[in-house]
Amino acid sequence: MSSPRSITVATLAKDIRLEWRSRDAINSMLFFSLLVVVIFSFSFDPNAEESREIAGGLIWVAFLFAAVVALNQTWARELRNQVLDAYRVSPAPASALFVAKALGNFLLVSLLEALMAPLFMIFYNLRVLGPAWQLIPVAILGTWALVVNGTFFAAMSLRTRSREIMLPLLLFPISIPAVQSMVEATRIILAGDASARFWIVLLLTYDVVFTTACLALFETILQAE
Amino acid sequence: MKRAFPILAVLTALLLGYATYQALVVAPTERTMGDVQRIFYYHVPSAWTAFLLFFVNFLASLQYLATANPSAKRVINWVVIAIAVVGAVAPYIPQVQKQLPEGLYPSSVATTAVMIAVLYFLVGKFFIERSLDVLAVTAAEVGVIFCSIVLVTGPLWARPVWGIWWTWDLRLTLTLVLWLIYVSYLVLRRFSDSAQTPKLAAVLAIFGALDVPLVYFSIWFFRTQHPQPVIGGGGSIDPRMLHILLMNWLAFSCFAFLVCWLRYRLEIMQRDLHEAQALEALLGDGLPPSSARTGSPINRTPSGTGTA
Image 1 (cartoon, each protein chain N blue to C red):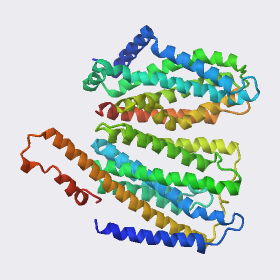
Image 2: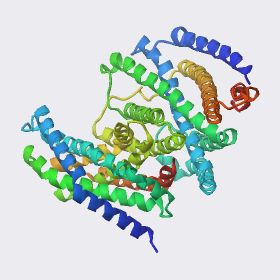
Image 3: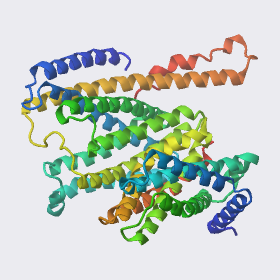
Image 4: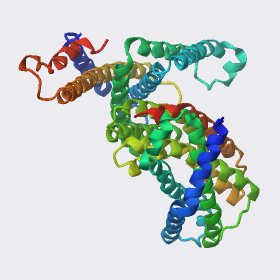
């Protein structure tokens, strides 16, 4: 009766409802990334012309750090009341659960980006000199790249000591090519001096490779206890 | 097997000494770089050894995950065979041959592809379940050590020759990222103390291996946009230098093998000890004194489940 899709939808709806009622993750992420932006603007003069060159890097680093805050809460929430054990014994496919969690995080981080990006533009006096619409695929693919591996590694670090610090330690080395692609693509589009096509294709490849790997191996991770 | 160890240790020490002598005294001095170039005889063999060990770690992790799932194992076996066949045939097709970078022979590509498959099946044949995981830890740990040597000796050479300690060149960055990935692998193993650590670590090793080609392409493209100093000339090498380099590589490989062997046995003994202690705790104090021989697995294992 319950197809993988209905399980995904039900879990996603539950997570969104939980988040809507508590607003824990989004509030802490918003405030955290605001702090990062402000601290960056003290560290690097935002009025200098060079800021345009590094703005792409700053904005993605801020989102990367903020995303970790949300990702850490993904599975920790399910540990209370043994919800995760219930998932394990249920016949529902693990990949459906994973997709729901990854989509939930994706929506959360996207919302954060939608709210923070205009603020960033204002603080750093940024004007997009290249084709601005290209920022949308970069943002979508980049966010998914962070979130899909982040959700996976958050599940992996559940069983480790000091798991809050474990997640970035696992996630950041693997994410290096994705972060480089996002930063370079954003920089090129903001400066408008070349085509960002290579970086978007690389980001897409990264997403396809790791989404496949996550879906294939999540069952192993979930059952590992 | 146990008796082979000291013999190999002595041979390795002799070989290392001979190779060092060759590198420091016999090898001709490089015309432009001078004596600092001799670091090359340690730097390059360490790099090759580290990459080989990382690859062994990947194969062992793959085999470890595959043993839990027989149908996946069959698929992976066929994929590996397909890679070997395609890799052995494709470089000889003229259209593909033109795509190969200059200086890379089709035969070396074909040999590498076949060697990958052979190594994969050898690892699967001689190691089973638990020893696969022990092999993975060993390879990752020793690999990180050799990779650290590479990252330290590189800047020592670069400073006098390039005038800078570090540059974000393709090979340097790739080595650094590999090092980071494997350090995070070791951190995971250290921080995770459940019985499922091997599985989690194996999954992380697969993710790391998937990441390497992506890192390669991202840096490759980045570098073509920002020209950097060229590594090592890329031209021909003096045959005497090549000979000494290969001699050093042999010595370093023997040394790495020796250290891996030692580490492997240590890990096996440690795990047996933990199992014995857990068993003891489980059975409790109610044991009659005669059956308090829970220490016996410790004495049995080094020769029993040791290296195959």
